[in-house]
Amino acid sequence: MDSAMFSGREKGETRILPMMPIRDVVIFPFMMTPFVVGRESSIRALEEALAGDKKIFLATQHDASVDDPKPNDIYQVGTIANIIQSLKLPDGNIKVLVEGSERGKVLKVSSEEGYFRASVKTASFRVVSTPSLEQLVQRVISLFEQYVKLSQSLNYETMIAAAKVEEISKVTDTVAANLSISIEETEEGLRVEAEVPGFKAEELEVSVEPHRLTITGKREAEKEEKKKGNMVNSERHAERILRVVDLPVEVNTENVTATLKDGVLEFMLPKAVPAKKITIEKQAA
Image (tube, rainbow, N blue to C red):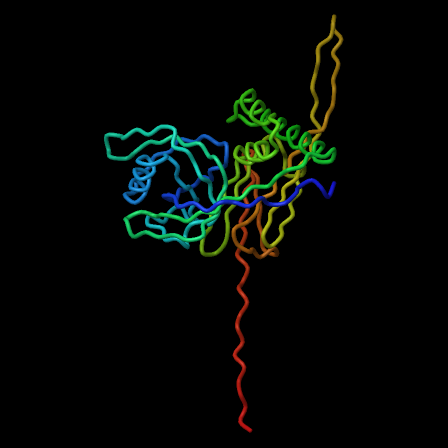
């Protein structure tokens, strides 16, 4: 890989924005997502954003079952989003449509006004195109195209059009936003679900590191093409998948279990035991 692929992180700016913790979903830049807002603090944050420039910082909470999350219950990295539409529902909840614009990291959070207000630092990477990078991008798009073909929940034309753009950051965010991977954190460990449509257990390989889960798969597929007359031409080709999941906590790699059912690979990953502090006893002279 060429060393000049990335020129490094560009200097970001710091902004003060209303912040909303969200459950069970990660909002990526360039991703348009509808959801319903019901918590009082979230409605206040939304109203504050609507009264201003319609920008809000969205960050996923660690545990979706927590109704009143504190700042340390929310991931520090999230996405600044533009509020495209909002509709107040009869039950008092608000349905919104947002579009992610750029990634940011929380520096400080306050909640004196009944909702979270965050100091967010944005950051971006300037990418220098090289032959090696172009090959990698085309490889990612090719794998994503195979994934979309196998998936029953994604529109093929829409997804491929979204992935085939010139900006590399848009390609990676589009792919990441549409890979169906669920991570649930409990006191004991992590439960991870990843879609691997069409693959059998023997066609998959998994490696687990303390902070990363990697899934690779390869299978031979046959495509039949009818010719003139009664002649049929069969063409075999390989289909591959690659999933790399960064884990939010360190896990014990020795006691991981995995099951495959209905095209969904489920993992149970126990958390690593934290290091114990040892008290040094002072002996009498």
